[in-house]
Image 1 (spheres, helix red, strand yellow):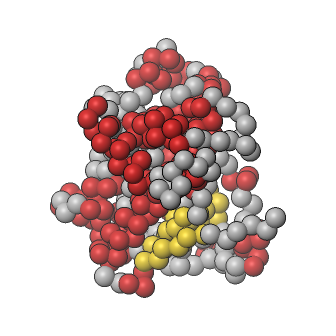
Image 2 (cartoon, helix red, strand yellow; image 1 turned 60 degrees about the vertical axis):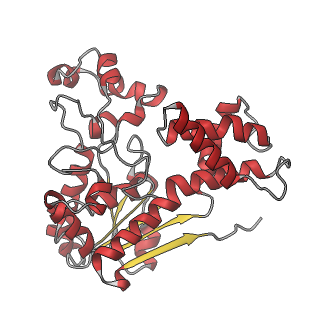
Image 3 (cartoon, one colour; image 1 turned 45 degrees about the horizontal axis):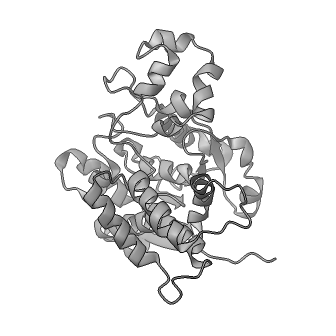
Length: 324
């Protein structure tokens, strides 16, 4: 089992995942992999001078190393499962779409994230502000001369860290994950066939959208996390329009109004519309559906239709209630 950690493609380390318990009790050999992050792993310029996806190539090379060397560690190169969580789940889903990985692994477990999630991939390049901020533009020699701390500073304190994600490079990816999985073009056929050849497991946690509460705090300008109250009016007039515009990338006025109206209708608790208790759970439910649940359903439905092997596709929901 080869593990890829999460962290939004901007942070993370194998130090957080020693894997000793899994290897001891799971009767498996576990390999954990570091890969380049932030601008080191995913910086790409619109002119093509900076190619991007370096972090994905790191992962691919790690998989090649496992294939070539795992026998020496009592592993079996014909029985390899790649798995990961959050951005790690996105990573394994993306590796499952790269036909150059054929033969390197046979199964995929994507925990809380798939390649078609809205936060997984960029089909448009927008790193101009970052490159200007460095003072180097696309001058690779200049960028290489800067200290690592300088290159990473704004990815931690600024708002452009989200620009560092996997993208179309016409090498690792010839198209978006969505178009590869759901398309029928000959250019992406080998990627689609490779995806279909794998056993694929994905799933979600029941309250995935709770991660969005921190954003709501900022939006409503409150710091009280434990006693956060969202009124129905704030839900309908502030939060929903923000989600539609920022997360669903809806900009024109008429579409924004229509999307806001539809989501308000769907997620309002009409049995008690004036109660102040339901909006917080409704926010969690909406983000869970949009960013996690629906992409997982899309992915397993596509995989099932492509593979024609019902036993090769599995969807789970982790919903265990913690003990108080």
